[in-house]
Image 1 (tube, rainbow, N blue to C red):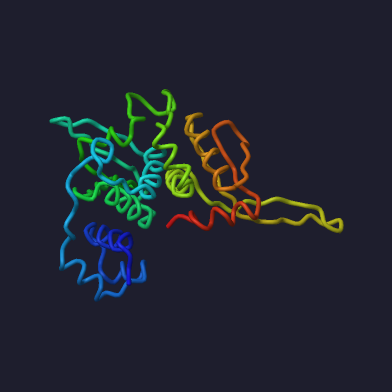
Image 2 (tube, one colour; image 1 turned 60 degrees about the vertical axis):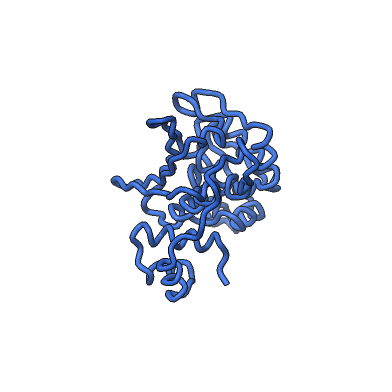
Length: 249
């Protein structure tokens, strides 16, 4: 009745301390199903193998989403024994986005737990693995906007197939859906009109170009009001983004 991704999101929320009742209301899943999932434990995970170093299958759609989150609010940090931590910084005000980030990591790397570390106003979603640099070759020293960010050929192929998922990650990390307004004189009277639009901001010109490319692939017109800000405001374009992004929650 429920797909595996929904199950992962629900279990991640329960593991983080959410009650069965709150998860049931938020995701529309019966408490009986949630209880069975919780008490039955995790399903058997595949071997801890890297999709880039072996023939292990990569969950491409989830990876495109995770790539967008990484480019926006993610980083890799090296720990002992060449183990890397993938960290996605999330605003605690948006629990659904935190659940989705945890589910995306679990889909890409299902053989290890996903951790949540809370701070004031922020929740970091964490996963440890030696092979995270294999999946994110953009890793390097310093802020992303101060170094080159180019996708490998295999990454571009995934984004070309799943541009909506990359955009979902990018806009969930560094974008927003806001109510904009404008005024117009009608019949001699000044009238105010409100309309929704999406904004994406990033200081990296390379990441901004990736966002523009993905929008073109998805058939979404955009414009650049500033060099570090992208706007999607046309009614049909906003409706298209609403299909796979929507307001944060």
